[in-house]
Length: 218
Image (cartoon, rainbow, N blue to C red; front, side, top):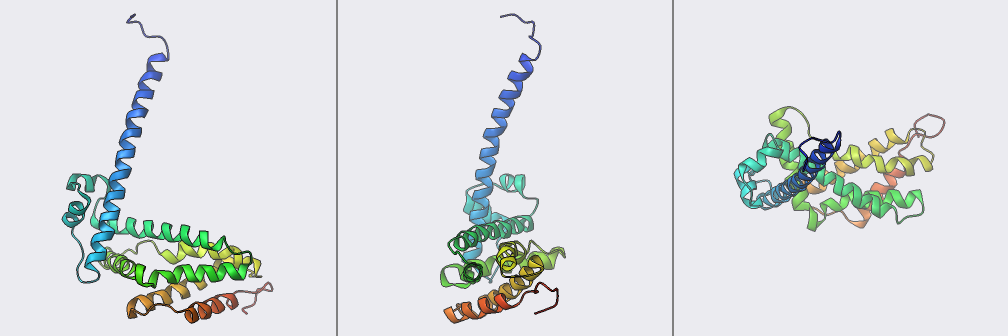
């Protein structure tokens, strides 16, 4: 073959090969991060609120190395923040799916409350409690708060509250979310699971706490 490069062709080949290599590496890194997050979640669930896992505990459970851990996370606190964000996105997707089953805004608000409070049910409570406890430790040590789940979940309430007549649905949704997540925290702290009556009462509270169209508090 000729050693004289054809203009543009060699760069195209080099770029294509480089992109292919990066894509493979990216897929591998994605798997590493998922393994670390899943392992951290399991270790935290096992330890509950008695002790916080070390990096060594997490990488051992993930079957990875310290090098793999620090390739993706500068510290254990960074992993805890990522774990909280990951859990928040999963909850967001779950609640959004449940809300989509309802034709009325009132029904969607009820599904929202039910989805949020489900994190205090028996199958989820231990994991939720452990993650929030570890996230609280991050705030104490670093002085900065990790992502707040209620802020993200409040986004789902804005539209049904707007349909119900709220003049400021984003603001009202944030108030309803803080109140509901506060109730969730109470259930997690006491170990009491939310009842159907709890869900109805919180839903009724959310449905009546919004700013009417004239801009005056209800």
